Amino acid sequence: FHLLPVAMSDGYNNVPKAVLEPRRPGESLKVAQTVLKRRDRNLKVIAERIQQVAKYRKGLRDQRKGPLNIISPNTLMRRALQAQKDEKRARRVKAGHCSKMKVLKPDCRTIAVVRNSRTGGSKDVKAALRKMRLGRHNTLVFMAHTEKTLNEMQYVKPFVYWGHPSFKTVFNLIHKRASIKEPEKGHGHTTLLSDNVMIENYLGDIGVLCTEDLAHSIYERDKNFEKVLERLGAPPGD
Image 1 (cartoon, one colour):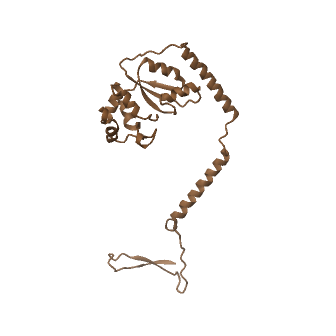
Image 2 (spheres, helix red, strand yellow):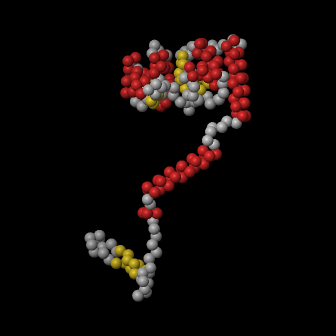
Image 3 (spheres, one colour):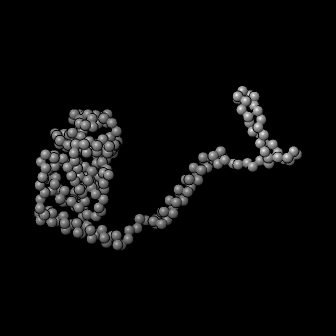
């Protein structure tokens, strides 16, 4: 077939339109019809297909893992040896066989403590980490920079690292990663701080009204330091 330009006079500025005609007179018009995928796409069918594929792949993964989360004997033995080794270390620390840590920077009133990703540890050490709100890996808490706190850090030293944050670091952590406890929604329920309205609602009774007030209270360790920490959740670290 071939195309013939045909003039149009229906108000479209006489734009020529191509029409299909047979190449030779008397022949039938053979048009190669191209089905556009976008035109014939059925979103509902595709969505169901995606769900089926995802379910199939999840079944394969579960089949590889097995019905139970089986731990190999080597892993159990390694964890037991790590716990025994850490228990001996903790006993030495309690007995005072290691040097006590001292406050080296008295002007730094607050330290930031982060739980690392190291696994293992004895039961007592794990309990101490939970007491410090560092039971989960990669979580951060602020603590008072005192000799008592540093000695507690010595007890859990293999599983944490700490340092003296600047005011800018404290402000950025509060602004981006801090969470606050909401007891009315259940025990242990926390929500990320999204605006100053939340700070005023949950901390306004102690004079903390905005992010800068909250960061200043933590950095300077003022009279509201303990109350602020009680109402804040442990933000995840990077």
